[in-house]
Image (spheres, rainbow, N blue to C red):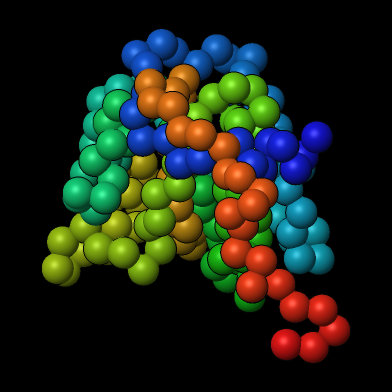
Amino acid sequence: MLFNLLKSRRSIRKFQTREVEKEKMDVILKSALLSPSSKSIRPWQFIAVTDRELIQRLSLCREPASKFLAGAPFAIVVIADKDSSDVWVEDASIAATMIQLAAQDLSLGSCWIQVRERFHTGQETAGEYIREVLEIPEQYSVECMIAIGYPAEEKKPYEEDALPYQKLHYNKF
């Protein structure tokens, strides 16, 4: 049930050294391709990264927030053609969420690393840094990276009693 999956999905920042099987990577990537997008424009593209050296370099995109990526055996960089859709940010974000839910469904942990509007250095954005490392064409913007792997930490599921019900409104605010 999706509700149980949502309750159990937590951000995982520590991963086992165990590699993610190709079959599981394929399911996650196909799930990303099934993501809905405005007017079915599908402005997103995905870069699957398994090369340890590349993952290490990507983990430096916005230290210290992205440093944990170095321990992940698999990362997906979510990019989008910013000129093809005025809602590319939303479309890329939906796809990133689908990636995380697919990973959770496969008993993998994941964590979103925000890239858009974040900085690598005072002069260079995290997106520019990643674009250079992965040779991404200029027309694409980097929304985020998703670190994926077998969890090396346990986090308990959210409890229904602790949900912020005060944020729910019916008919009017």
